[in-house]
Image (cartoon, rainbow, N blue to C red; front, side, top):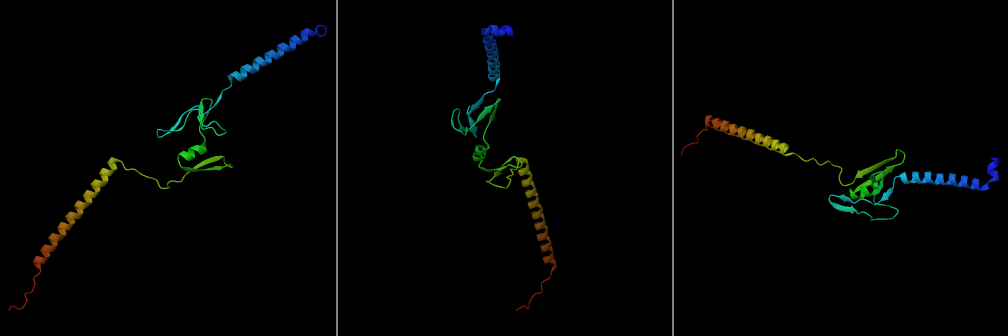
Length: 153
């Protein structure tokens, strides 16, 4: 230590080397950090562009890409799908609420439609047969009934 005090230029050299190695290490760490990219993807909904690359550079970017994953703001998602949005801070839950319709729409398959048609045809056939049998029974009953003839003139 006493020898370093005799040669002050060695102290400066040692401090410079330590400082340079620290800068080099910090540079390596910063170079390996992932980038955060704003508005670097096109976003489409049903074939219609809703956000273009480079569009909307302000405090509310349309998209954020970080670690290779693209993030899209929930507020924008709720606007696009015409839903209300609610946030519960206690449970840290985002709730998208469908405001269009609360009823479920159910589409029938062709097979189900064919089955419904066949059932309806069967019911129609049964009703027709029963009607025919009732008509025949009524005719037979009318033949059996003797209608009294009135006074002949």
